Image (cartoon, rainbow, N blue to C red; front, side):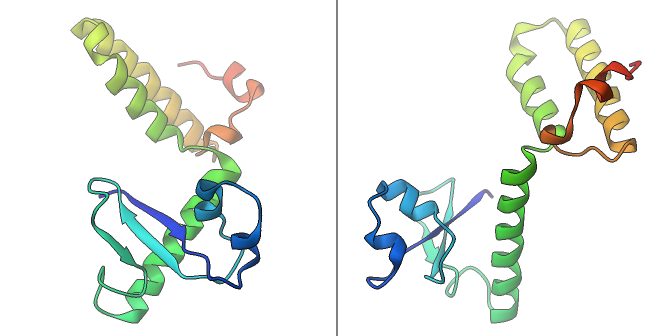
Length: 136
């Protein structure tokens, strides 16, 4: 289940008074306004982070904090390499023969392992020097 965090800014919030787009306001996280969570599969099922998704306040705070940390991590470093590999393979599976797809899977898997062994997990951390030393 994919979850998206956004803020509903209060009337006194500086973000709400700013002249940025409504979408940008929802995604602005630099204030203390309530955080809401939307499930990506069904837009109708919205719930504030303080209600409904989990039973205890402690677990709701942990969920919210982990989602915020993940979004900050992705914005700072980019998307994870393993996610990119899976998306790429899924998007090209219908275009390739079985043997060719197997080779793509093999070599991209080797590249992913190579990067992980060198402590590179995010696409933003991948460099030309790293790729030039790869012997997949």
